[in-house]
Length: 104
Image 1: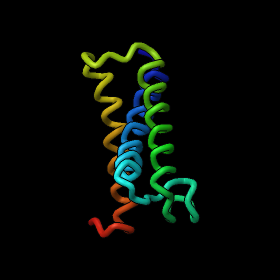
Image 2 (image 1 turned 90 degrees about the vertical axis):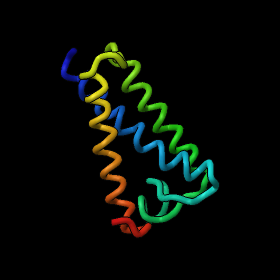
Image 3 (image 1 turned 45 degrees about the horizontal axis):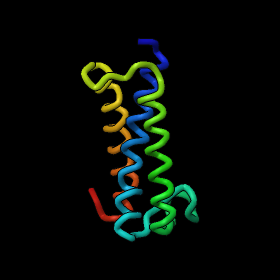
Image 4 (image 1 turned 180 degrees about the vertical axis):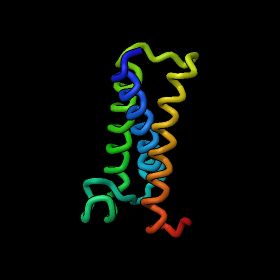
C-alpha cells in the first residue's frame, strides 16, 4: 500500500464521520451549522442544506476510500486507518459543537 492510500483512507473516514451529523439533522428537519451558514460553522443552515452537505461528504468519503487503491474491509490496516480518521473527526466535531449544544 502506498503512502497516499493511507492519507486517502484517513480523510475518507473523516468525511464519513462529518456526513453523519449533517444527514441526521437534515433528515429529522433540524437546522445545524454548515460551512455555508453565517458565520460559517456557527450559524444555522436549513435541513435541506444539511442533507446536501451530508450527501456531499458521503460522496467524497466514498471516492477517497473506495476509488483510491484497493481498500479491503478484511484488511485490518485499511480499516484502522479509515477508523482513525473517523474517530479524530468525530472527536473534533464533538468538541466544536459542544459549545453550542451544551456538551462537555
